[in-house]
Image (cartoon, rainbow, N blue to C red; front, side, top):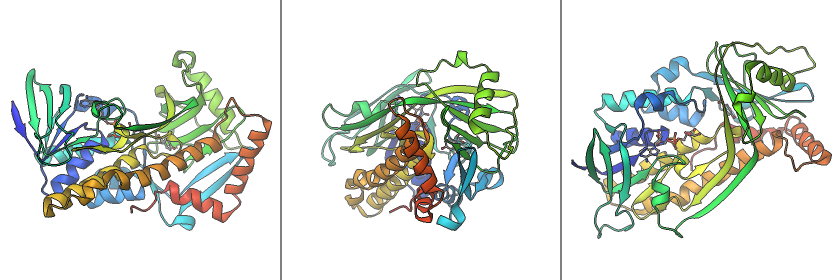
Amino acid sequence: MKLETQVGIVGAGPAGLILSHLLHLEGIDSVVIESRSRQYVEERVRAGLLEQGTVELLKETGAGARLEREGLTHYGIELRFGGRGHRIDFKELANRSVTIYPQNKVVADLFDIRFAAKGRIFLEAADASVHDFGDAGSRGPKPKIRFVAGGEPHELTCDYIAGCDGFHGICRPSIPEGALTVYDRIYPFGWLGILAEAPPSAEELVYAYHERGFSLLSMRSPTISRLYIQCEPDENIEEWPDERIWRELHARLETTDGWHLTEGPILQKGVTGMRSFVIEPMQYGRMFLAGDAAHIVPPTGAKGLNLAVADVRVMADAFTQFYKSGNQEALDNYSRKCLRRVWKVQRFSWWMTSMLHLFHTDNAFDQRRQLAELDYVTSSRAAAQTLAENYVGLQME
Ligand code: APR
Ligand code: PHB
């Protein structure tokens, strides 16, 4: 089947769906090609923290009704070390908040709003490939996305392709060899994460530095906790029965004031590796990459989803400028504008990760240095303010 649209989007994760939604609001047509089922995409356990800017965008564009009802707004986090907690007050330091709202609900809300608006989304689309996107001008053949849906081959002809297909997608690898520069750092540890049917044992997120390793107390609702412990990058989850996970969490989150971690049935557990990854540029010809297709951040700064949203806000603005005025300048500057934020977010995510995790290559000096950094961040307003303004989300350019 031959199809046509203005912007062909590969991937129905947060980047692809929010882009499709923002374009629709500007009267720009798009078609989304997604290899998985809606259920699979909505059930993937991913991040759960939205910057205030992300929350405002979703609410202002009509995609925030459930977020308004169910989101947990937080005005601070706790840094825990030496058995004591130290609060970073976002209200006082940055006058902004973050909201706990799981990514799978963001995606589900966007599927609802796009289908309600008769958005064209091909689910379970197989064997997608992208073609004829290399000519930035409009002289050559128009870009195409070929895929199989419902057992039938499809060819989507578009003005532009948006590669929102994540780290393992096809768009980035389809860019000719030598056109991209890769910046990559793989960390010597991962996170073992659990979802537990246990009321969160703290009002706000707790990031804990400990001689046994990093741990994080987060949450999904008043009855569901989300907790992580630093582990080996290739940790075998089979070696982590529930009792061992809880024992480690108790040890790493212990305080001297008798605080107690509430346990509960573990609903899901898994190990994720950690890396910082960026490709430059984030565009090639008539293809524009956004989100995990272009960059990966370690989860310590809770930036993955929020950076994907920032990318597609820039992309949607650029497409709007082009279709409304014919001006190509914002499209030409897409990568430059995104990368300014990407690298500042990479720096913050690397900094949080380096401050809070144990590194095999470190010695006693390094661990004292980390404790001094934590002591500085929790005792200097200037230092705390830099953490706060990055964590709640830097202002969009
Ligand atoms: N064809 C069609 N769809 C594809 C293909 C393909 N060849 N390859 C991947 N996809 C889909 C995936 O199934 C997924 O639904 O692209 C989507 C990419 O979504 P994400 O991986 O969630 O990436 P992104 O939208 O950039 O959002 C980034 O998601 O992974 C988290 O931590 C990350 O929170 C961050 C957010
Ligand atoms: C989460 O709730 O999944 C979460 C929160 C903060 C992080 C990472 C993950 O830094």
